[in-house]
Length: 402
Image 1 (cartoon, helix red, strand yellow):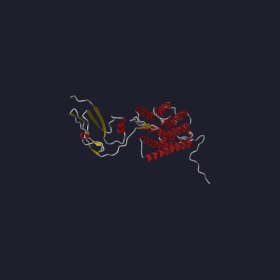
Image 2 (cartoon, rainbow, N blue to C red):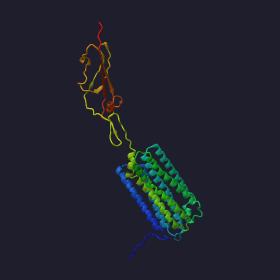
Image 3 (tube, helix red, strand yellow):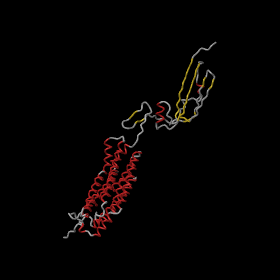
Protein backbone atom coordinates (compact mmCIF):
# COMPACT_ATOMS: atom_id res chain seq x y z
CA UNK A 1 0.00 0.00 0.00
CA UNK A 2 1.56 3.26 -1.11
CA UNK A 3 1.35 6.43 0.92
CA UNK A 4 1.07 9.74 -0.88
CA UNK A 5 3.60 12.23 0.43
CA UNK A 6 2.45 15.62 1.63
CA UNK A 7 3.01 18.39 -0.90
CA UNK A 8 4.78 20.49 1.71
CA UNK A 9 6.57 19.63 4.93
CA UNK A 10 7.84 21.54 7.93
CA UNK A 11 11.50 20.82 8.59
CA UNK A 12 14.68 22.62 9.45
CA UNK A 13 15.40 23.45 5.82
CA UNK A 14 11.83 23.74 4.54
CA UNK A 15 9.14 25.93 6.13
CA UNK A 16 6.75 25.96 3.21
CA UNK A 17 4.28 23.75 5.03
CA UNK A 18 4.08 26.31 7.85
CA UNK A 19 3.37 29.13 5.41
CA UNK A 20 0.67 27.16 3.60
CA UNK A 21 -1.06 26.03 6.82
CA UNK A 22 -1.12 29.50 8.37
CA UNK A 23 -2.26 31.18 5.15
CA UNK A 24 -5.07 28.67 4.64
CA UNK A 25 -6.11 28.96 8.30
CA UNK A 26 -6.30 32.75 8.31
CA UNK A 27 -8.14 32.74 4.98
CA UNK A 28 -10.74 30.30 6.33
CA UNK A 29 -11.22 32.47 9.42
CA UNK A 30 -11.68 35.53 7.24
CA UNK A 31 -14.37 33.86 5.15
CA UNK A 32 -16.06 32.48 8.25
CA UNK A 33 -16.32 35.96 9.73
CA UNK A 34 -17.53 37.34 6.41
CA UNK A 35 -20.21 34.64 6.28
CA UNK A 36 -21.35 35.67 9.76
CA UNK A 37 -21.48 39.28 8.58
CA UNK A 38 -23.60 38.32 5.58
CA UNK A 39 -25.99 36.37 7.80
CA UNK A 40 -26.39 39.33 10.17
CA UNK A 41 -27.08 41.72 7.33
CA UNK A 42 -29.45 39.27 5.66
CA UNK A 43 -31.59 39.24 8.79
CA UNK A 44 -31.70 43.02 9.06
CA UNK A 45 -31.98 43.64 5.29
CA UNK A 46 -29.67 46.61 5.69
CA UNK A 47 -26.22 47.16 4.18
CA UNK A 48 -23.88 49.86 5.42
CA UNK A 49 -20.65 51.40 4.03
CA UNK A 50 -18.56 49.42 6.51
CA UNK A 51 -20.03 46.22 5.06
CA UNK A 52 -18.89 47.15 1.56
CA UNK A 53 -15.38 48.01 2.76
CA UNK A 54 -15.20 44.71 4.59
CA UNK A 55 -16.38 42.84 1.50
CA UNK A 56 -13.68 44.48 -0.63
CA UNK A 57 -11.02 43.69 1.99
CA UNK A 58 -12.12 40.03 2.05
CA UNK A 59 -11.86 39.72 -1.72
CA UNK A 60 -8.41 41.35 -1.84
CA UNK A 61 -7.19 39.18 1.02
CA UNK A 62 -8.27 36.12 -0.95
CA UNK A 63 -6.27 37.30 -3.99
CA UNK A 64 -3.25 38.07 -1.81
CA UNK A 65 -3.41 34.62 -0.21
CA UNK A 66 -3.53 32.96 -3.62
CA UNK A 67 -0.33 34.81 -4.55
CA UNK A 68 1.27 33.56 -1.33
CA UNK A 69 0.49 29.99 -2.42
CA UNK A 70 2.12 30.81 -5.75
CA UNK A 71 5.39 32.13 -4.27
CA UNK A 72 5.55 29.14 -1.90
CA UNK A 73 5.31 26.86 -4.91
CA UNK A 74 8.18 28.83 -6.48
CA UNK A 75 10.43 28.20 -3.50
CA UNK A 76 9.68 30.77 -0.81
CA UNK A 77 10.11 29.13 2.59
CA UNK A 78 12.76 26.56 1.73
CA UNK A 79 16.53 26.73 1.68
CA UNK A 80 17.97 29.07 -0.93
CA UNK A 81 20.34 26.36 -2.15
CA UNK A 82 17.44 24.58 -3.80
CA UNK A 83 16.01 27.71 -5.46
CA UNK A 84 17.20 28.88 -8.87
CA UNK A 85 17.83 32.48 -9.88
CA UNK A 86 14.82 32.36 -12.19
CA UNK A 87 12.68 31.26 -9.29
CA UNK A 88 14.02 34.14 -7.20
CA UNK A 89 13.01 36.61 -9.91
CA UNK A 90 9.50 35.19 -9.99
CA UNK A 91 9.33 35.32 -6.21
CA UNK A 92 10.37 38.98 -6.35
CA UNK A 93 7.60 39.89 -8.82
CA UNK A 94 4.85 38.08 -6.95
CA UNK A 95 6.08 39.27 -3.57
CA UNK A 96 5.84 42.86 -4.80
CA UNK A 97 2.21 42.25 -5.73
CA UNK A 98 1.47 40.72 -2.32
CA UNK A 99 3.01 43.73 -0.58
CA UNK A 100 0.85 46.16 -2.55
CA UNK A 101 -2.27 44.10 -1.82
CA UNK A 102 -1.22 43.98 1.83
CA UNK A 103 -1.33 47.79 2.08
CA UNK A 104 -4.62 48.21 0.21
CA UNK A 105 -6.36 45.41 2.14
CA UNK A 106 -5.19 46.80 5.46
CA UNK A 107 -6.46 50.24 4.42
CA UNK A 108 -9.92 48.86 3.60
CA UNK A 109 -10.11 47.19 7.00
CA UNK A 110 -9.35 50.54 8.62
CA UNK A 111 -12.06 52.17 6.52
CA UNK A 112 -14.55 49.54 7.66
CA UNK A 113 -14.00 50.31 11.36
CA UNK A 114 -13.93 54.07 10.85
CA UNK A 115 -17.15 53.92 8.81
CA UNK A 116 -18.73 52.11 11.73
CA UNK A 117 -17.65 54.98 13.99
CA UNK A 118 -19.36 57.48 11.70
CA UNK A 119 -22.53 55.38 11.74
CA UNK A 120 -22.62 55.08 15.53
CA UNK A 121 -22.06 58.69 16.55
CA UNK A 122 -23.30 61.79 14.65
CA UNK A 123 -21.59 64.20 17.05
CA UNK A 124 -19.36 66.78 15.41
CA UNK A 125 -16.29 66.10 17.54
CA UNK A 126 -16.43 62.38 16.89
CA UNK A 127 -16.94 62.93 13.17
CA UNK A 128 -13.93 65.26 12.97
CA UNK A 129 -11.69 62.75 14.76
CA UNK A 130 -12.89 59.92 12.53
CA UNK A 131 -12.48 61.81 9.26
CA UNK A 132 -9.02 62.95 10.35
CA UNK A 133 -8.00 59.34 10.94
CA UNK A 134 -9.45 58.37 7.55
CA UNK A 135 -7.32 61.07 5.92
CA UNK A 136 -4.20 59.92 7.79
CA UNK A 137 -4.83 56.31 6.77
CA UNK A 138 -5.24 57.35 3.15
CA UNK A 139 -1.98 59.30 3.24
CA UNK A 140 -0.28 56.27 4.82
CA UNK A 141 -1.52 53.97 2.06
CA UNK A 142 -0.48 56.28 -0.78
CA UNK A 143 2.94 56.80 0.77
CA UNK A 144 3.39 53.08 1.38
CA UNK A 145 2.50 52.15 -2.20
CA UNK A 146 4.97 54.76 -3.51
CA UNK A 147 7.77 53.48 -1.27
CA UNK A 148 7.11 49.82 -2.09
CA UNK A 149 7.02 50.42 -5.86
CA UNK A 150 10.10 52.69 -5.81
CA UNK A 151 13.45 51.37 -7.06
CA UNK A 152 15.16 48.80 -4.87
CA UNK A 153 11.96 46.85 -4.36
CA UNK A 154 11.33 43.13 -3.97
CA UNK A 155 12.19 42.62 -7.63
CA UNK A 156 15.81 43.58 -6.90
CA UNK A 157 15.99 42.21 -3.35
CA UNK A 158 15.23 38.54 -3.96
CA UNK A 159 17.74 37.87 -6.78
CA UNK A 160 20.47 40.23 -5.52
CA UNK A 161 20.00 40.35 -1.75
CA UNK A 162 20.15 43.40 0.50
CA UNK A 163 23.56 44.62 -0.74
CA UNK A 164 22.05 46.81 -3.44
CA UNK A 165 19.00 47.74 -1.32
CA UNK A 166 20.36 49.24 1.86
CA UNK A 167 17.31 51.51 2.39
CA UNK A 168 14.74 48.71 2.16
CA UNK A 169 14.57 48.32 5.94
CA UNK A 170 14.14 52.08 6.41
CA UNK A 171 11.19 52.07 4.04
CA UNK A 172 9.38 49.31 5.90
CA UNK A 173 10.15 50.85 9.28
CA UNK A 174 8.46 54.07 8.14
CA UNK A 175 5.49 52.16 6.69
CA UNK A 176 5.09 49.99 9.79
CA UNK A 177 5.41 52.89 12.25
CA UNK A 178 2.81 54.98 10.45
CA UNK A 179 0.52 51.94 10.33
CA UNK A 180 0.81 51.45 14.10
CA UNK A 181 0.06 55.14 14.70
CA UNK A 182 -3.20 54.90 12.74
CA UNK A 183 -4.19 51.73 14.63
CA UNK A 184 -3.64 53.50 17.96
CA UNK A 185 -5.72 56.43 16.71
CA UNK A 186 -8.56 54.05 15.77
CA UNK A 187 -8.58 52.64 19.31
CA UNK A 188 -8.45 56.10 20.94
CA UNK A 189 -11.46 57.19 18.91
CA UNK A 190 -13.41 54.28 20.41
CA UNK A 191 -12.52 55.53 23.89
CA UNK A 192 -13.47 59.06 22.89
CA UNK A 193 -16.87 57.84 21.69
CA UNK A 194 -17.92 56.48 25.08
CA UNK A 195 -16.28 58.99 27.45
CA UNK A 196 -19.07 61.57 27.20
CA UNK A 197 -21.98 59.13 27.07
CA UNK A 198 -24.43 58.81 29.95
CA UNK A 199 -24.11 55.08 30.43
CA UNK A 200 -22.87 52.69 33.06
CA UNK A 201 -19.20 51.87 33.46
CA UNK A 202 -19.85 48.26 32.57
CA UNK A 203 -21.52 49.24 29.28
CA UNK A 204 -18.66 51.59 28.45
CA UNK A 205 -16.13 48.84 29.09
CA UNK A 206 -18.12 46.48 26.86
CA UNK A 207 -18.06 48.93 23.95
CA UNK A 208 -14.36 49.71 24.39
CA UNK A 209 -13.60 45.99 24.64
CA UNK A 210 -15.37 45.41 21.31
CA UNK A 211 -13.19 47.96 19.55
CA UNK A 212 -10.05 46.96 21.42
CA UNK A 213 -10.35 43.60 19.65
CA UNK A 214 -8.32 45.25 16.89
CA UNK A 215 -5.34 45.92 19.18
CA UNK A 216 -3.65 42.55 18.39
CA UNK A 217 -3.16 43.95 14.89
CA UNK A 218 -0.52 46.24 16.40
CA UNK A 219 1.29 43.26 17.93
CA UNK A 220 1.21 41.48 14.57
CA UNK A 221 2.60 44.57 12.82
CA UNK A 222 5.50 44.75 15.28
CA UNK A 223 6.21 41.03 14.86
CA UNK A 224 6.15 41.49 11.09
CA UNK A 225 8.80 44.24 11.28
CA UNK A 226 11.01 42.06 13.48
CA UNK A 227 10.83 39.08 11.12
CA UNK A 228 11.31 41.36 8.12
CA UNK A 229 14.55 42.63 9.65
CA UNK A 230 15.73 39.05 10.13
CA UNK A 231 14.89 38.29 6.50
CA UNK A 232 16.86 41.29 5.23
CA UNK A 233 20.03 40.42 7.14
CA UNK A 234 19.80 36.61 6.82
CA UNK A 235 22.14 34.74 4.49
CA UNK A 236 19.38 32.27 3.59
CA UNK A 237 16.65 34.83 2.92
CA UNK A 238 14.16 32.45 1.27
CA UNK A 239 14.12 30.22 4.35
CA UNK A 240 14.02 33.10 6.85
CA UNK A 241 11.20 34.80 4.96
CA UNK A 242 8.72 32.11 6.07
CA UNK A 243 8.18 33.77 9.45
CA UNK A 244 7.86 37.19 7.84
CA UNK A 245 5.12 35.87 5.53
CA UNK A 246 3.33 34.11 8.41
CA UNK A 247 3.22 37.30 10.51
CA UNK A 248 1.94 39.22 7.46
CA UNK A 249 -0.92 36.78 6.98
CA UNK A 250 -1.86 36.91 10.65
CA UNK A 251 -1.92 40.71 10.60
CA UNK A 252 -4.10 40.87 7.51
CA UNK A 253 -6.43 38.09 8.58
CA UNK A 254 -6.99 39.39 12.08
CA UNK A 255 -7.47 42.98 10.86
CA UNK A 256 -10.38 41.77 8.73
CA UNK A 257 -11.79 39.45 11.38
CA UNK A 258 -11.79 42.23 13.99
CA UNK A 259 -14.13 44.25 11.78
CA UNK A 260 -16.77 41.55 12.19
CA UNK A 261 -16.16 41.31 15.95
CA UNK A 262 -16.72 45.04 16.45
CA UNK A 263 -19.90 44.91 14.36
CA UNK A 264 -21.64 42.23 16.41
CA UNK A 265 -24.91 43.34 18.02
CA UNK A 266 -24.18 42.36 21.66
CA UNK A 267 -21.16 44.66 21.71
CA UNK A 268 -22.91 47.63 20.10
CA UNK A 269 -26.29 47.36 21.88
CA UNK A 270 -25.20 49.37 24.97
CA UNK A 271 -23.83 52.07 22.70
CA UNK A 272 -27.04 52.21 20.68
CA UNK A 273 -29.20 52.49 23.81
CA UNK A 274 -27.12 55.30 25.25
CA UNK A 275 -27.43 57.42 22.13
CA UNK A 276 -31.25 57.28 22.20
CA UNK A 277 -32.57 60.58 23.54
CA UNK A 278 -35.62 60.80 25.71
CA UNK A 279 -37.69 63.91 26.23
CA UNK A 280 -38.60 64.52 29.85
CA UNK A 281 -41.89 66.40 30.28
CA UNK A 282 -43.69 67.81 33.29
CA UNK A 283 -46.59 70.15 32.58
CA UNK A 284 -48.73 69.86 35.66
CA UNK A 285 -47.87 70.16 39.37
CA UNK A 286 -49.24 66.67 39.99
CA UNK A 287 -47.14 65.01 37.30
CA UNK A 288 -46.07 61.54 38.30
CA UNK A 289 -42.57 60.31 37.49
CA UNK A 290 -42.14 56.63 36.83
CA UNK A 291 -39.01 54.67 37.54
CA UNK A 292 -36.44 54.84 34.79
CA UNK A 293 -35.62 57.63 32.42
CA UNK A 294 -39.18 58.64 31.44
CA UNK A 295 -41.34 61.31 32.97
CA UNK A 296 -45.03 61.34 32.03
CA UNK A 297 -47.27 64.40 32.16
CA UNK A 298 -50.88 64.33 33.34
CA UNK A 299 -53.34 64.08 30.44
CA UNK A 300 -57.11 64.17 30.23
CA UNK A 301 -59.34 62.13 28.00
CA UNK A 302 -61.80 64.26 26.00
CA UNK A 303 -65.19 62.86 25.06
CA UNK A 304 -66.75 63.30 21.65
CA UNK A 305 -69.33 66.09 21.68
CA UNK A 306 -71.68 67.58 19.13
CA UNK A 307 -70.27 70.70 17.48
CA UNK A 308 -72.35 73.89 17.01
CA UNK A 309 -71.93 77.65 16.97
CA UNK A 310 -72.20 79.70 20.16
CA UNK A 311 -72.46 83.50 20.57
CA UNK A 312 -71.49 84.95 23.97
CA UNK A 313 -72.36 88.63 24.78
CA UNK A 314 -71.31 90.73 27.78
CA UNK A 315 -73.76 93.37 29.15
CA UNK A 316 -73.57 96.27 31.59
CA UNK A 317 -77.24 96.52 32.57
CA UNK A 318 -77.51 99.61 34.94
CA UNK A 319 -75.18 101.88 32.92
CA UNK A 320 -77.24 101.25 29.77
CA UNK A 321 -73.98 100.85 27.92
CA UNK A 322 -73.91 97.84 25.75
CA UNK A 323 -70.59 96.29 24.88
CA UNK A 324 -70.78 93.37 22.55
CA UNK A 325 -67.99 90.97 21.96
CA UNK A 326 -68.60 88.00 19.80
CA UNK A 327 -66.43 84.98 19.30
CA UNK A 328 -67.75 82.58 16.65
CA UNK A 329 -66.00 79.32 16.98
CA UNK A 330 -66.46 75.69 16.04
CA UNK A 331 -66.32 74.17 19.50
CA UNK A 332 -67.40 71.13 21.46
CA UNK A 333 -69.95 72.15 24.11
CA UNK A 334 -73.10 70.40 25.36
CA UNK A 335 -76.44 72.02 24.54
CA UNK A 336 -77.39 72.40 28.21
CA UNK A 337 -74.35 74.44 29.21
CA UNK A 338 -74.95 77.61 27.20
CA UNK A 339 -78.21 79.27 26.36
CA UNK A 340 -78.73 80.90 23.00
CA UNK A 341 -79.94 84.17 24.66
CA UNK A 342 -78.25 84.73 28.02
CA UNK A 343 -79.90 88.13 28.62
CA UNK A 344 -83.42 86.66 28.86
CA UNK A 345 -82.48 84.12 31.48
CA UNK A 346 -80.85 86.65 33.84
CA UNK A 347 -83.16 88.22 36.45
CA UNK A 348 -81.11 90.80 38.33
CA UNK A 349 -82.23 93.21 41.03
CA UNK A 350 -81.75 96.94 40.35
CA UNK A 351 -78.41 97.18 42.08
CA UNK A 352 -75.16 98.15 40.42
CA UNK A 353 -74.33 94.83 38.83
CA UNK A 354 -71.67 93.82 36.38
CA UNK A 355 -71.50 90.53 34.58
CA UNK A 356 -68.42 89.73 32.54
CA UNK A 357 -67.64 86.78 30.40
CA UNK A 358 -64.26 86.13 28.82
CA UNK A 359 -64.03 83.36 26.29
CA UNK A 360 -60.66 82.36 24.90
CA UNK A 361 -60.25 80.15 21.89
CA UNK A 362 -56.98 78.26 21.63
CA UNK A 363 -55.56 75.45 19.58
CA UNK A 364 -53.87 72.32 20.81
CA UNK A 365 -50.40 73.87 20.58
CA UNK A 366 -51.15 76.88 22.82
CA UNK A 367 -49.33 76.58 26.12
CA UNK A 368 -50.96 79.52 27.97
CA UNK A 369 -53.57 78.98 30.70
CA UNK A 370 -53.95 77.07 33.91
CA UNK A 371 -51.81 74.09 34.73
CA UNK A 372 -54.59 71.64 33.93
CA UNK A 373 -55.30 73.39 30.64
CA UNK A 374 -51.62 73.29 29.72
CA UNK A 375 -51.45 69.61 30.56
CA UNK A 376 -54.52 68.93 28.46
CA UNK A 377 -53.13 70.90 25.56
CA UNK A 378 -49.85 69.05 25.80
CA UNK A 379 -51.50 65.64 25.88
CA UNK A 380 -51.59 63.59 22.75
CA UNK A 381 -55.36 63.03 23.09
CA UNK A 382 -56.30 66.65 22.30
CA UNK A 383 -57.11 67.10 18.65
CA UNK A 384 -60.03 69.60 18.74
CA UNK A 385 -59.97 73.25 19.67
CA UNK A 386 -60.39 73.99 23.38
CA UNK A 387 -62.53 76.73 24.93
CA UNK A 388 -61.46 78.32 28.20
CA UNK A 389 -64.31 80.25 29.85
CA UNK A 390 -63.92 82.58 32.84
CA UNK A 391 -66.97 84.23 34.37
CA UNK A 392 -66.78 87.12 36.83
CA UNK A 393 -69.94 88.33 38.63
CA UNK A 394 -69.68 91.55 40.64
CA UNK A 395 -72.61 93.06 42.61
CA UNK A 396 -72.48 96.51 44.23
CA UNK A 397 -75.38 97.62 46.46
CA UNK A 398 -76.23 101.29 47.05
CA UNK A 399 -79.36 103.43 47.85
CA UNK A 400 -80.70 105.63 45.06
CA UNK A 401 -80.88 109.36 45.84
CA UNK A 402 -84.30 111.05 46.00
